[in-house]
Length: 64
Image 1 (spheres, rainbow, N blue to C red):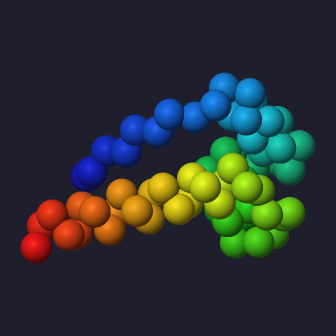
Image 2: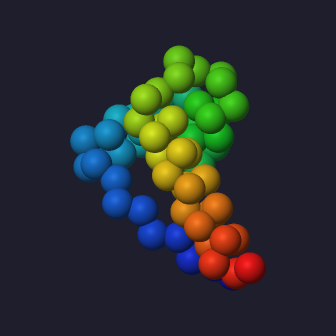
């Protein structure tokens, strides 16, 4: 299984943890909820998603 390592701003990560606790969700579920549009669109989450997509596209291009 591929491994993904992210560098995340500590304060923003804490805010995400707090939101997950408040919504009685895991951090993963909170991220998915935000990405699916269930919450106000976060510029940070949008940037993270764009970076992940760019990395994925680059990996695919390198493979062939």
